[in-house]
View 1 (cartoon, each protein chain N blue to C red):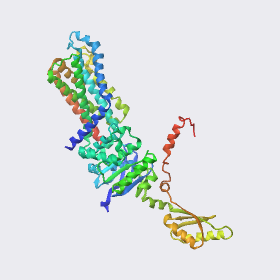
View 2: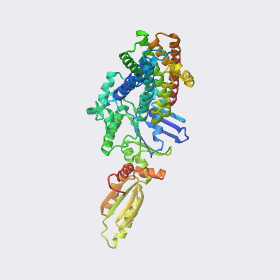
View 3: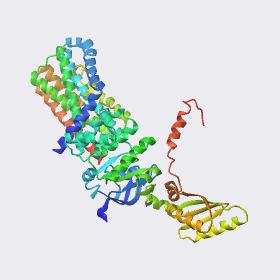
View 4: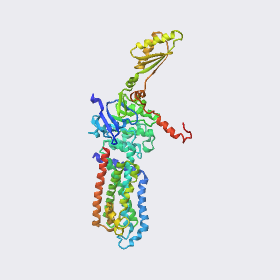
Length: 254
Length: 343
């Protein structure tokens, strides 16, 4: 009970830190708009190519926008925690007679919340651009759920780097590390359209399975052969990343 | 009386992963309701010891009990009994002073309403009631110290750890913090503080330990420690009227003083007598009476006590970094910019 209470109040505090800086809220939205217009407009012609799975390039692109937003959330979150570590506020929290895992969880939940809020806005933008989700209302809810859990997984990764390095430059540049995961995917083109080496890289990238599951729900509907692998990969990623983050965190704070 | 000891430390050692020995085996105890101080230069092991006792760091070996709880076995119980204002003031800059303190209260188990009331009470106590609605990031250095101190008091701890509580404050801010601390001490809170400032240790602490290079080199009341350095010096100026009788009179006075038990040394020079005694304040009236009885007329008398600086020097052979050195450094850096050239 006490653990949930502590987690809740720390979560509220972290949420306030995020909202307190308008740039934190605006920049993911700008990124989303940027992707839709910069890639969406010039590339929309490719849907005419034979074999392209969707007639609407925005629909094809939407999962990519969702995934990159969640990935960068992880990077931002690591930076937020590092700020607390460097200011000494983190030590102040460690001094309180609380279950110390509530500090970690209070941060991770903000990552999940951000991912959910961003996914909601991105979907609304996509709908405004004429994208229709073939999976229906249930499909929309499923996409939101996947995006939220995905945000949680990447937040763990961001926190791990902050805890381990305790270094501003390194933590700030985690988004560089995240880039290949976000872009070595079928984000812009279906797999059949990619060169051979890229196809292999894409197959090895766990993020791609999640991306394709989300895309299946939007473009094709309940295509379980694509959706299930995405769910399994996401579940595995989440378990591994949160477990690692918890382990590192415990080691750093005992 | 072990029950009376709120902090008990035995053979405490801390070696950092890099191999640096920060604390090299220290023993000490802090009694309930006393104000105990660690006095020593930067890197002496003061902060490390305090962080171990507050459960922020793990010790390498030795034993440490705080408020009756072992710091390794029952850290949560220790955290509940202790308030800790760290040197590096850990604040949440984006929260208002009131919200920051309220969350602290909640984390120490108060209900939201109680925590809010306690936050207002504490803001009042440290003189920040009027800025409680402002973000902590906008506070001045002195205000940050005070709100941090308030945070350490949120759960009414029986024991307060203060790591260099006034470092970086201007004299006015320092005085304000000292007054709060003296108030807390009067109300029965045990205070354990570290400082590099002789004046601070002297003013606040009933007992101090001098720590250098991870070891305690001396401990006791500031008064007793100063007495160990060699006692107070009483300087007496005599009106001997000049002439033949003068030298004889001085010699007589010197001999008279040396007979007194409390006099450690006495030496006459011109018309000045320099007398070293255990306790200058207590000795001065008797010295005057004695000299008067023997028709030596005294025109001036002054008592000088050794400072804790002298104590530190006696035990370490070095001086604690001069208090205003950092200010001088800053001035040196600024000089070219102010068009003042090199000094």
